[in-house]
Length: 436
Image (cartoon, rainbow, N blue to C red; front, side, top):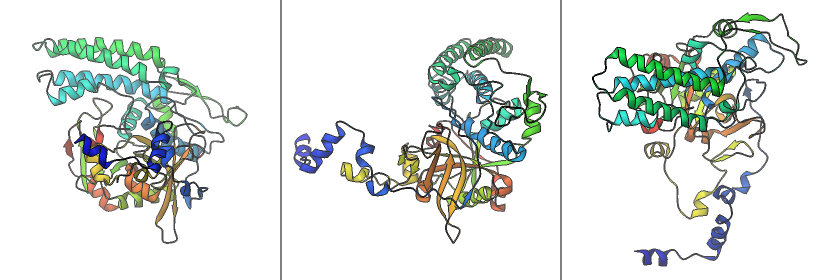
């Protein structure tokens, strides 16, 4: 067989040049379609104004940055703030990690009678917590803990670089989980006491990495010279949120999904995929792409940004900030055809949502059909197109997955379908193995 392979695949002169190039450089640079490198049209017929690009640094908190950027845009618009401002991602991330720790430990208690090789138990130990998440987590955390400005609880090195710290959190949680399972006859009271002890230790680790969350603070917006616009006021995180945002994030929003592997117009819920034990599982309505686009366009036309997620690295030219299926000719480079459609890529674990961003603009043709879209990213102002990514509509169809919309931009059909009883999916489902 090897002999037949060798005879059938003799390297030609042009292929030898490709082989030499691949020995010293990345495939993407060799596969770049030079004909698609012309200057990008950056005009958008409809766009939501924004001020300032955020930067999640070396962390997986895009879901948190995106959710808070949606709220930030609302506050800056309604308050007519003269300068950019951010909410403290570090403040909510502290509670996110504490809540996820509690969720994991309680789930271990709830499943302690099952064997260690049970699929749910194995999934729990493989995924005690992460720095990833969804808009559902943003909604539950904000409702429970409120918001604070970034200057009140700024980032730390650890919050900007989560990987190593998260490794130690996971290790401690797995050790604690084994302790909770070691005595099958332990009473619930004993287990709760142990869990509280373990959570206290996790809390201590989090304060060292992120700082102690603020409970009260004094704040007022500032102008370009750094002067307070009006007299500073005393707030709690909850009173700050109520005064400046005051949205019901848990009930006024719908997460739409485009997953062609499942029946459309059905709601789905993901087991154990939530940020707080007493919160909500990840819930979404699966709809055709056209219905997602209609809701997105309505929201943008009303100057309202949206939480958006996609498989960001597919056909993305990072230097230009362009996501376009015509960016690269991978078929030509390898001499093979990559022909899977969106459903096949999902089923085979080849594609899934990997990154959340803030959808802010659409360019419509004379008939009202979208030509391209733009998102505000959280990779810093120097990334992509001035901190943004521009996506062709064809790319949008293939690699966009989730959009969170305010119900006032939803059709009657979406509203009605979202009220049905959801189908519960397991936590190891292919679509959610690599959540943003």
